Length: 135
Image (cartoon, rainbow, N blue to C red; front, side, top):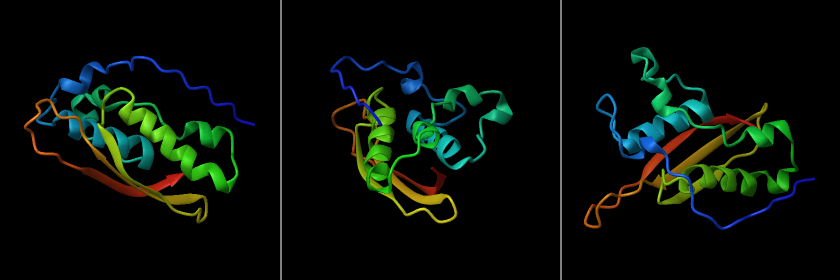
């Protein structure tokens, strides 16, 4: 049984949202963090002892620890990832979310989001990642 409690409040701000590290923009850092935590890809900044800059919590960990039925795994996954990205300001909004069926314990995930823009006249960009996740 899951109990969801939602409260309106000011989202915590991540101090690294405005910082470029190693020639990587904040949007690049968010993408690297997602690839690392969701797909298990190596962190390219870890070799430079800057891996902490792309660390984020695994949004799907609660689903691994508490298996849920197939009917609600997709909406819960989308909610958890949206909360991770939009809540602290790493993304303006989620553009696309697709989570496939489980095949040998792995699911194909496609995620697209709009990074936040600093200025109102910046062109809107969309970042995307694809890979297999274990849930």
